Image (cartoon, rainbow, N blue to C red; front, top):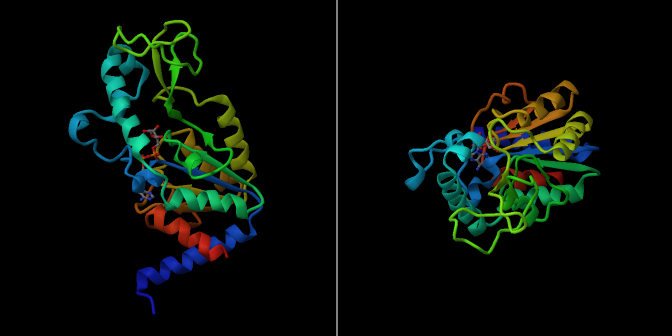
Length: 252
Ligand code: APR
């Protein structure tokens, strides 16, 4: 016999598993919450220690980088360390396995940590780039670092231009490729899974809205309520590292 809350969650997970079993095309959108159990803090978590006095909105912008590239780079070096030390968790692995079980799965992530790829998910659409890559601010292409470190800031090996992390900052455009494919997937899918995202940052948050309009079954996995929760067909309230593997087991 299960307690009330656990019983309700089981019943919702059963309905979600049934939708996944019947699905033709599953579109998944993940956010920082899926990597929380890998030890990478989410954006809405207060920044800790050294970075407690900054907010991401003050550091992850082109204006902040222009004003103070040293500080922005130190923040990114700190976050790169966290990402390099992190391992994919059970939620990342469950999504990689889900892709093998359904006819078609499109995985869109707002995360820049590469953990889905390391868990074996194919064709991941990186909506906000990848923190482990450098991009040249002059040539606007992914670039290697110059060996010459005398200038303090990382420079492009080819042209000497200032490098920046290859991520999308507040106010910047989403890369065209991932944006187009993700939009088409949200239109086409019959099941949309929103995992570990606050559903606050657009255009990513708009993908669930497209899926809702197209009458896909929208399933949210998040321990906390979001702006999407009242509109979702099913809300599985809990950590994705536990909910996703349980859901996968139920799909059989
Ligand atoms: N499992 C699932 N969800 C979780 C977990 C967990 N273990 N822990 C926390 N969450 C949820 C939180 O409840 C919150 O709703 O993850 C969400 C994280 O929200 P954000 O920090 O806002 O992350 P995200 O939605 O990915 O942010 C979007 O904003 O800062 C920019 O570009 C950055 O990609 C980022 C974007």
